Length: 141
Length: 413
Image 1 (spheres, each protein chain N blue to C red):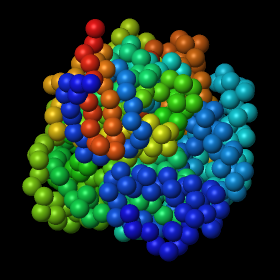
Image 2: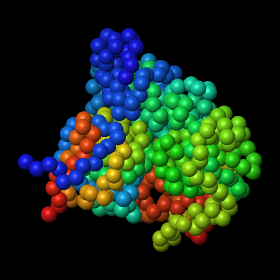
Image 3: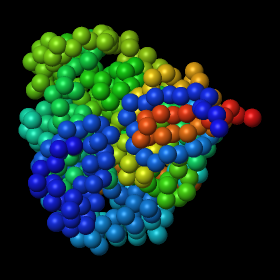
Image 4: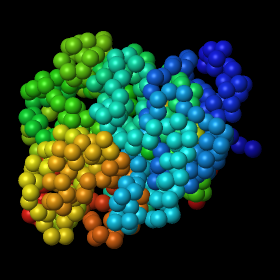
């Protein structure tokens, strides 16, 4: 067995170990402002991920956007079966953390290198909150 | 995290399953943020309605109520998604409306005051300097921290409810002195004559410094700001910037001077906002096909002063044919507006005044948009034009009087 192709260390983390396909965003995120909560697809006009489904994805976002209502939204989309597997933030806010913890979705904050340097959308990654690392398992395609 | 003997007992289940689960959840959140301990709170304000909670949240609430979950501090609710008097007229889904009724019953069983307002800080409770509370939505948080000098983080629905049940919240973020100091300076050189101008300030600063821990220090305003102006400023900062606190020199309690507000921090940025900067905000909106059949005064709910001003601005004129105008407020403010005649004036113009809701979270909003042929949404609230995009509205910020003129003339410039 070979080790990961690349590793990102995160500052804070919660949740189970998860693996999945990466979605790397250059724009921040709110599950209320940007996401259609019935399909799991980013629908905000002009969002850099417009049209992208977050279902079962490991999502990398530089920032979180406003929004107390987001706290229930993660639980809601998980209940509907369209939630992402993990949320990896550069900088987040308490609502995202409270919401993800409530829904038992892995969430991390802070990174020692920008994910876009090593991970591209479609790559397969593993999030290990207890070890506070994100590992690139294999490249897309 | 350090736990007091009382908290240890809660975790063991001495105060029931609901309190045990709530504290265990708070502990996980507190550990994420390296909180050293819990702090007692005096008041909680929570968001909880069927639109934001969905069936999953509804089931959770039913289970919590069945476990005899009861709030231990005064707890109020934020704006919700249904004004029952208007649900049928707005084409809201009867099944969801019925769930909303049952959801409210569950909250009342849990000793929640279902006040349904996002302007609790103007109408219900004004915490004092240093008082710890657990509030959401974001507009309530930034007002509490900034204008009252009270202490709260953004507490989402599940977190505020947990705090209400246990009577405490993890001590991180804006409960701590170190996060309350200014991090950047903003000099106000614009006239800021309208509420929308204050929202535009929040948009400029918030977009440039998107961070929960960014704390702008405003200085140099032409006059002392009114509560509604600070409300629109705060809501926009929180919305565009995810910010939870600002200072305004000479106006807010932790800012007797720029230096005091910065508390030793070297500002990461110094901005100047003049009239040209505000005008650039208004000029920056894509007007699409220039349809203007929807004008919304909401997000945050309107104060009595705002409703009075709106009634005077419309002045008995009629809306342009096919144009719909909505304003939202609390039950208390709407009742007062009715007694004082502002409500009748607005309704005779054709303005629909909804109570206990926010336009942004109205149940069934996306289908409502399609059914009414709405594409552009015009508002004097910088917050709502930012947050409603997922429902596929094209949004345009305009000053209050411009909104009124657009509503009456049917012309968008």
